[in-house]
Image 1 (spheres, rainbow, N blue to C red):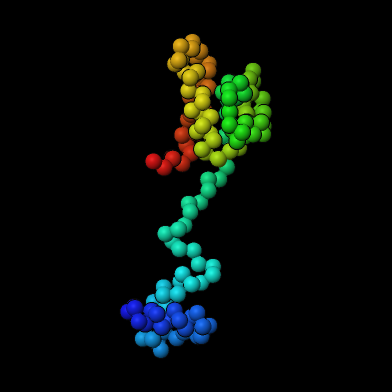
Image 2: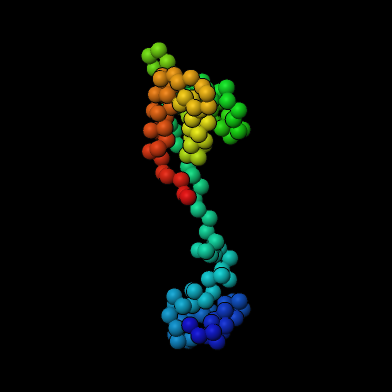
Length: 145
């Protein structure tokens, strides 16, 4: 739409007048585009914020939960861990934790040292528990680079 027509349409909209596309010789879509940023409920597409991540419930092996309980966690991580529901499984247990995927990834990152790095002994059961949890976390949507 030419600038002069756009200015006329915007001025009419601001004055509260009815705007007929045929009066200005343009389409209704051009009218909507010209006044889009003037509308009170308008959200510009360039300013849209990505949707927040929704909480996901994953079963965390008890060996992972036991280690994380002794680790220095952020308040959000600590709250998610404390709100987890314990489910008995044979000799051990799993902790059903509901948190956003980013928190699950943080838990997994904090659990990495027990894979035998940093001078710690390798304990196969702990390594297997971490792998199981890693497999569950990896099924979540990937992080954006």
